[in-house]
Length: 121
Image 1 (cartoon, rainbow, N blue to C red):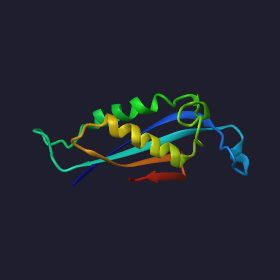
Image 2 (cartoon, rainbow, N blue to C red):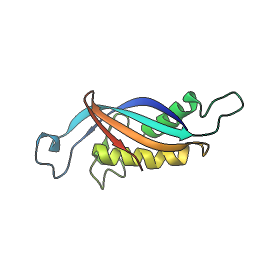
Image 3 (cartoon, rainbow, N blue to C red):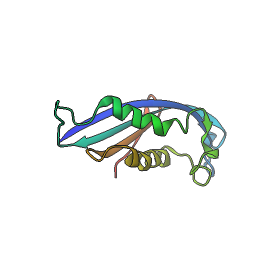
Image 4 (tube, rainbow, N blue to C red):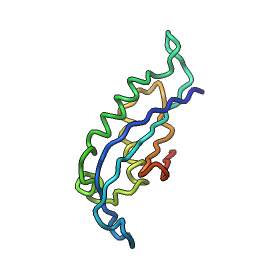
């Protein structure tokens, strides 16, 4: 099994509805997002999935969140824009973008350099 991981980021604001603390107020993050895909088959030149392609796949999802107030962007207009929900949403959207020669196995969201949340289906 080969595992390929890329990372990208976007800047966005959010507030946590119902949270008892400072994060209930509007605040922003530079969100780093890592995605890992896995596959077993190499192509004719020995690549499981092109890094460049995976970076473009991830960027196509993250562009919808960049410089937005996440609470106004579906589905976060109806659910809290937590790291947990963001990771799951990125995962769900990436599954429809990434080629079926690999499987998306993890999406990790970093709210800060020391705070990481990972979603694995």
